Length: 308
Image 1 (tube, one colour):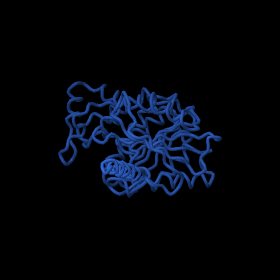
Image 2: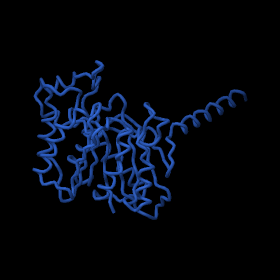
Image 3: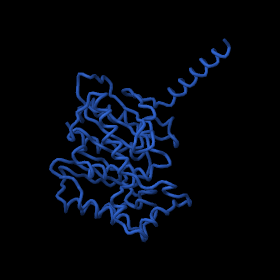
Image 4: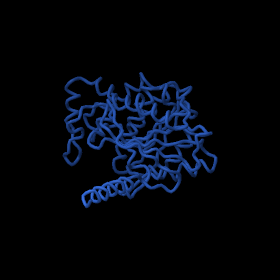
């Protein structure tokens, strides 16, 4: 009897611990898809945010966001910072500035994050020596950028498009078409959002790329990656007639690397026929590479992409 009681107590404790890990939000609710298995990438949590008053009787646009563990609750994040996505979106919905939407926060794979988010086809366009150099690159503290992982963003996007999106569309009252399906992220999450709308223009109608990490690694000199990204985008950017793309950047900490690289991207966007109707790049002097900065300006891409 004591053993059974102990098992019950341990089980309840585990449930409580699991519940505590789910982010707390001030607006709306979060439903977790726990440890979602995939045949393409490592299993990971997915936190689905539903706005206050969510009902299956309505249809909702969907915003897919990377680094899902950083989006809602600073008490659960590694650096005690978060985007507070629920508060910003709720306010804009209440003010009638954006359409009703849900947010699908896909947790990153931790050690596989860089490999999951690094655009694969531009990498594969490099010659063998340059590819090897990229894979061996290190951060400023000497830690390997990719660890033992091979770049696998094509598989990550297959996970999103072939496994996750059908699940979300089945479980929730979503608008399934590209015109109501968006993708967003910051830093490496900005890169993979750009890559996603290029690779799957019939799935995603808009992308928000905040503090896009154009260097790909953590060095500028003798770095072939930015030019590879530009060459890829030149051949693969979606049709500006029915797609919207947002970029932004600051000039502090890691963002200090971005201004000259973003300028090249902006020139390409103009060359490919993007205009203020379907493309926006915003510069935020004094802002750094952090959740606090992205939180402060997140309403801008939201209104650009999800305007009624």
